[in-house]
Length: 300
Image 1 (spheres, one colour):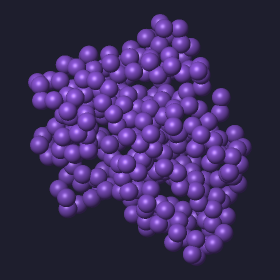
Image 2: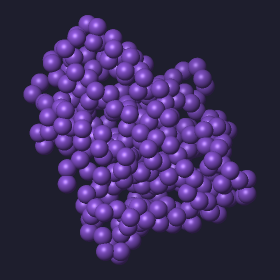
Image 3: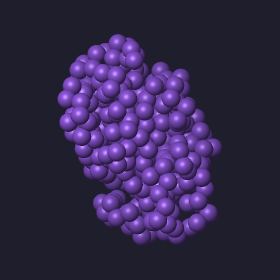
Image 4: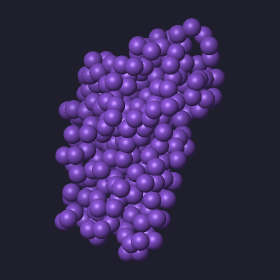
């Protein structure tokens, strides 16, 4: 293998499988279950579309996700360890999952057999589509001939710039998950009041609430504009994407609105990719999460 290092990420990165394959990225899937009995590998044994379809059709059923095991990571690392290729493994924020610990346990086990193995495990401090952007930045560093230590250093430098600004279709999944007391207290129980949420540095923070989808999406756009306004960097220095859940048409429409607004505000941007948010986060947000992921580029 001629690559300077290989990139592994857990399934929280929500990269389309074809894109991950094209960029030579190994994804270690999470598992998802609708009955607490049978856990299926995301994208391998259950598609994201099927996952959301079941959520929409089976109201009141709350699916669960389960992290990859150490043996799942060992299987992903081993071919590269045997080939002498260093590995950079990027994991979902440790505030949301123990996936990183599984990766670290796999690394420890492999080092006993292969003492010269080089495996760096990074806490992305982010998740979902934003984690995917971060993983793609790692691929860009590799493909632009950054060496292994330099790439690790640069990835650690940029991860704190990552932000997700998003809203959801309702509060029931957030409440059921029990992880978002701060957000729930902002939205309260008033009919049709929905939260606007920011994720940064591994945690979620309430960023307001409003009645109805249109207003909350306007607030999500305002958060993105505020972030760009406060930045000392040009928009070309950032990687930006829209993430959606069940409704692809809504995701594309939201992207088109965002492009128009950004161009209207004088930002030189021609496209924004649209990616589907996967089951790892969808179990907590329900079928209708929608928002932005943004992070500083590794090279600009």
